[in-house]
Length: 300
Length: 269
Ligand SMILES: Cc1cc2nc3c(=O)[nH]c(=O)nc-3n(C[C@H](O)[C@H](O)[C@H](O)COP(=O)(O)OP(=O)(O)OC[C@H]3O[C@@H](n4cnc5c(N)ncnc54)[C@H](O)[C@@H]3O)c2cc1C
Ligand SMILES: Cc1cc2nc3c(=O)[nH]c(=O)nc-3n(C[C@H](O)[C@H](O)[C@H](O)COP(=O)(O)O)c2cc1C
Image 1: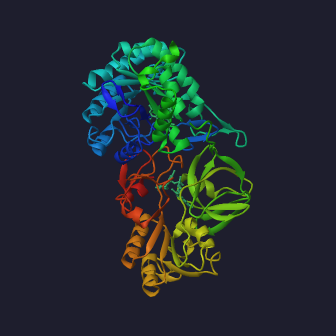
Image 2: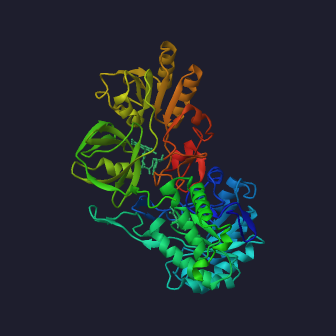
Image 3: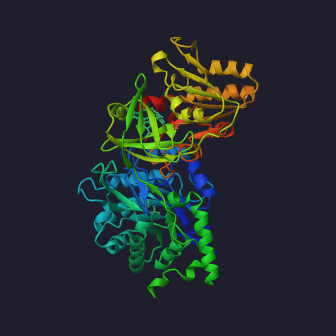
């Protein structure tokens, strides 16, 4: 009932672990797979080892979740040793990558491709070294990165992960598609800050971070809706999916699959199974046999 | 379908330190007049605004008060050491699993590891406590637990018995067949040996483990020990779990997520 095809990959259900939440080791991939996710995205990796920012790096309250982890990671070379390969795990794995410079995106993509992930996702949130602007913030930069990754990914499908922190997400999505992207992941966290009025300081060590979880959902649904109107490639709708009804809403906006990250915070690792069960309940009740029937229906 | 929603709050609450008590060399307890729903073995995240946020076990607990005991070993804990009554820190939690509470128990604490088992000792019925440290000046809670059956040991023999707590434990378990459970916290190498002693004597064991932590609530994945999350599945693990974790006593992940030997993990930070 929930089975989908995403860029030719069969997923038993549309829920995908979003990048950066767990997904750091082989054992965590297995554990998330066992808990019911249709696919698992690894924590973003780049060409070098990074510690990330100090703590507090994340916190949550009332449906709002903030994080500024600073892209910590063991680096792609160490990950290659750690994982060996990604095509023989219990669940399809999406390798998330990034670099500081355009060439590095290509180099990391090539190394990631050697692990044979089901898909490569490109986190374009870090600033371009020469323009000081994030790659997601400019259609030309997005095109360059997409091109560099595609040139090195072989036959592995590539999804470009977009940020809501832009004036017009449609033109960015369009640019990614034109440069060869096979899918769009939307969205990454929305920029935000919380100040503790007792301490008179921002709580996050990095001061500014990203808002995720339920607070992000309306923004994510809007982005997926706009992107669906702009491109033909499939969308992994991500942002605030916590309950089955949120996933249904994403599909109605046009998503083929749904990413779930912060949902784990609210409902535990079993969130994938819970969301799937709730989706099926809703579908039965509303006599919907397959997600294809409702995909993008909000546009009609 | 459930409708809204699950309420969860994990944001530091800024509290005033109500008292600071010196416990042993480089070790101090920080008290807060605030009630905290907490079970023995759980930990909190302590935030020094503008500096960092780190995990600390709840080491004193009563209805309207709690404390943690910190040992100064690096940047954050040295900054804590300088804090005084009236200074403010942020607290969130408590987090993690807790010790089961069984009678006929022996509690083995090494150094500041005593902090993680201290509220357990408070609630256990007649436990045997083995309190060990490198040397006399590092021992903590000697006064606090003087009414308990406590065996003190130091590596250099400067106080109590000379030797490791594992040797003392071996003696205790050999003499006292009634003991059914051993609770422990200290250096991981020590805990691994404690588990070995327990296994030889066929006694259950629960240990409080440490890994680098950022969120404390099972999201970031930094504290994974094999497929377990130290912050939510632990920090308290039982014999069966410990024996199914090849990383226990051997490997830990650095802040970056790269896995290294336990020795390197403690050296690098
Ligand atoms: C569940 C748990 C309970 C703890 N309870 C206590 C306690 O009651 N009393 C006490 O003195 N210490 C406790 N610790 C250890 C304490 O968190 C570290 O000593 C402290 O973070 C050191 O920070 P630093 O900046 O002073 O030292 P650093 O020089 O930064 O680090 C020294 C060592 O501390 C550990 N460490 C550093 N940062 C972290 C982190 N974010 N999370 C976990 N470990 C870290 C690493 O082993 C590192 O090698 C506990 C740790 C955990 C995981
Ligand atoms: C702690 C944390 C770390 C994240 N790290 C990454 C990352 O490394 N790469 C990435 O592309 N997105 C990262 N994200 C963004 C998520 O993948 C996702 O896009 C976002 O959280 C919105 O989805 P959610 O509301 O389901 O969490 C991170 C999010 C969180 C909360």
